[in-house]
Length: 149
Image (cartoon, rainbow, N blue to C red; front, side, top):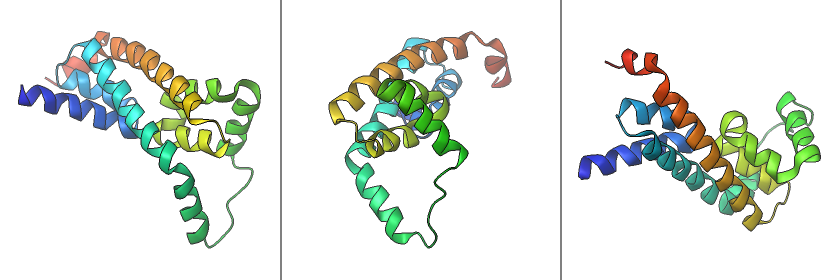
């Protein structure tokens, strides 16, 4: 029981920083793909929850500490603005696991002043869908399982 809980926490923790880390950790820890998907989604949503409530404070903290002004037209910023203009929060949420990471996606949503309920709705939908898909694929890729033996 205790070791299973630690496995779940490990997968969730891996997904808080980089979403693909959760499914890989689930394969390594020999969890089922459903367990892996659920834990990965929970891990991402933990980041979303924390950063949605603390994201504005983090942005203000960075602005105060920065010695030079940030680049306004970096490649990532342009891409984020294009996604926002075309698809809104749904696009940001959909691209958070594979592209923006669970750390940058919620901060981006907060920067675009998306209401919290919309952030939670679309980010959780995205986390569940991506969690199911990536966990299933990771468990079917036999070379990962052979690599860890």
